[in-house]
Amino acid sequence: MVPSSTDEMSFDEKLRRGERVEMVVDIYETADAVRDHDPNKEDMNTKKNAQTQQIGDTEWSRRYRLAAVCLGLLCVLLLAANTVLWVKFTADINQLQTSNHNLTSEINQLWTTYSNVTVMKEQLLGERNGLQKELSIHGWNYFNFSIYYITIEKKFWSNSRNDCKQRGADLVVIKSREEQEFISKTFSQTEAWIGLTDKDNEGSWKWVDGTALTTGFWWQGEPNDYGRNEDCAITGYRIAADNVSTWADYFCDFPVVGICEKMLN
Image 1 (cartoon, one colour):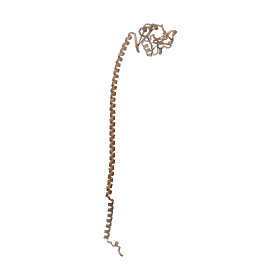
Image 2 (cartoon, helix red, strand yellow):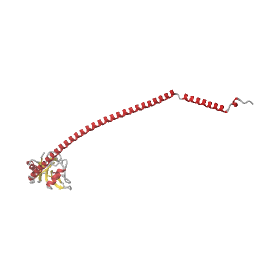
Image 3 (tube, one colour):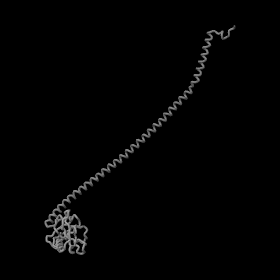
Image 4 (tube, one colour):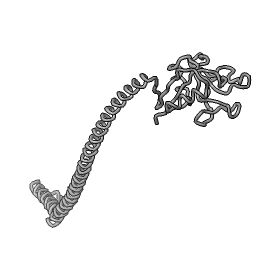
């Protein structure tokens, strides 16, 4: 049997061929690696990365500048607001100080006026007390801008009125409960003529100053026009439960004292 050419190759030759094959494979792998490692491609990638980084840096710079501008505007606005508030606060303080000064002046003026009025009041009270003392010496009593006098001699109603007129007064005209209480306290239970009559028209009682009777202090059952001839009124007829003297109608020719009143205003 004739051996083939392959069989006839020695072991050494086979080994050398195997090394060449490996070398060829290494060469091809190296060539592929060289093809894959393109310098231009690497430069482009580097540029792209640099551009991307530059774009990122630019965007970040813009945002930073925008934030800085906004922060600056905010500071300006805060400064302006603080300035406006300070100006307003200063104006309010000045106005308040002016108002307080004016108020203090008004208070001082009112206090001075009050002090003057107090002094005048004390002077008037002293003069009134002195006048009352002088009047009491002459038999007159003061009440609410009027002075009162009770006659000593008992006379008819018309004669008692004449006595009052000779003193520059007239028979008393009683217009309020306070005045009746004063008369009750001053002249007690003394029966005395007052300036009230219905001589002109029976049942139509009028005061000597021409005014009609509106407030009366009659005793129970009075006036009763006893004997159809009681046309003049007296006070001190009876004392009511509240210690106020009451009225009754009498004959005008009945002799009693009279109460005179002289108004001072």
